[in-house]
Amino acid sequence: MYSPARRRVLTGIALACVAVGCYLLWPVVLHRTAQAIVESREVRPSKSAPDFSLKDAKGQRLRLSDYKGKVVLLNFWATWCVPCRTEIPWLIDFEKEFQARGFTVLGVSMDEDGWKAINPYVAEHKINYPIVLANEEVNELYGGIEALPTTLLIGRDGKVAFMHGGLISREEYEKEIRQLL
Image 1: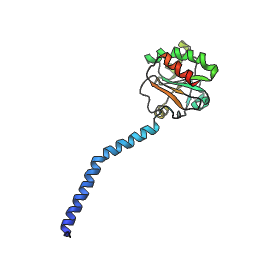
Image 2: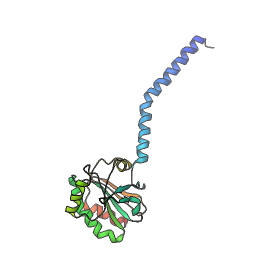
Image 3: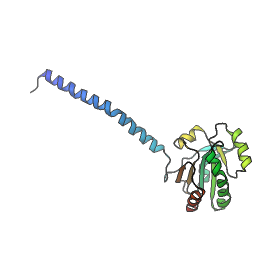
Image 4: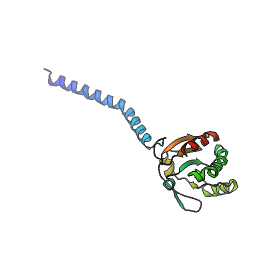
């Protein structure tokens, strides 16, 4: 058979091949693991919207789960965001038009200046739906909000039906809302 010296050399070569293979595959394994973690936390249509509890301007706690059984337009926005400013009048109109049918808009402000930026804006524009101030936990819960506005339409069952990063047309929102009502 093989001499002890030859066996040691072959074992060394086999171990070196395993080590090189692990070295080369390690980034792939890490990448796939990270992707799996992100996908498990990612908010997507047909998944339940993650529940959260945030304070409104009066310091009252508001939970997303308080709205279960309603169609919710969950809108992540900021006072400095130009596309957000474009759609806020639409959201005010949607709240007026569809509220009686079990619909609500819920605004989650991403303003770093907090209520000192939000309150004057809400008063000036006569926003008629609840506004809460986001925190880092909610940002992470929703996969890291990277575009404003980010809007989710949540069905009565608490599942995300539609998700939009950036501004879409008023007609598109209206079509989706009517579909869920």
